[in-house]
Length: 342
Image 1 (cartoon, rainbow, N blue to C red):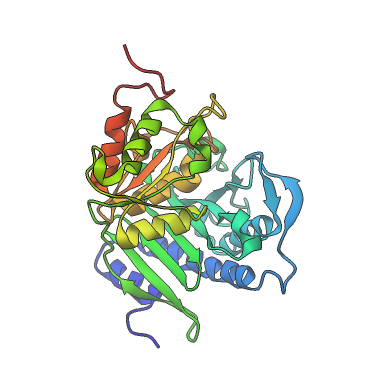
Image 2 (image 1 turned 60 degrees about the vertical axis):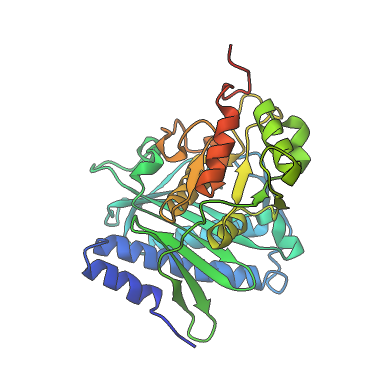
């Protein structure tokens, strides 16, 4: 039963109010439509024989699931037909995909992780799609990888779709972060929260503790103080959560506060982190900041980082403002490589 405006109605009103241009409105509508198709495939995984591994390794060096490939193709096929984009880039592809030369070119670039948390698929846990919209350069030649290398502050919109007990869509175009639920009867995304707000303080954190032995000293110290609870320097008890799906972790932070962390560690000393700057960190940072939250590497604002490549990685501390500030405080005496400053 519809109780609020649909996504289309909400975006049309935002356009009428001068908050969003018409072509960006359509980009968000069409991306959401592609997410609905992805949701169909996710929910019917076993019935459609799309579970399990594909047998290939993607550009990230990770084993691709069948649904990684399928969802990537769904987004590409759907969005190429809209003529709204100049090009796309995906976590699953080594290089960008410019719009076909025989088609009109839109004013935007779409960057996406087609199926975040795909390792959860085979055990029926929450997964999702993350996307970011960037302005395309004004040029007549085809889009190339370098055209995507813009800091997160240049994003004109970002969003994610969470496939869980309900299918949820969260979007931001710089005027708050807005949450929608997919109504299975009308097959429309219906607005349920027009301005999400992350509580400034928290007693909940999310981190993969199995990596603790690899963490740098500031992260070790920070978590130790959280674990000592009311008897420690923080003076309160903390709960830990871990779903292993960024979309689910961030949605929980948006809903009830908390901090989500994936720090840099010693497993791969040459890497600046685990999560992808452009496909995961930047869009989630935009959503969180527009909901009153914060997103940091531990040493500075994520959205101010200048990407050097399509698949750059980054450390992430995201969530309630005061807790992110606490985490940053532990890192002040250390370099990004975890070495104590003299």
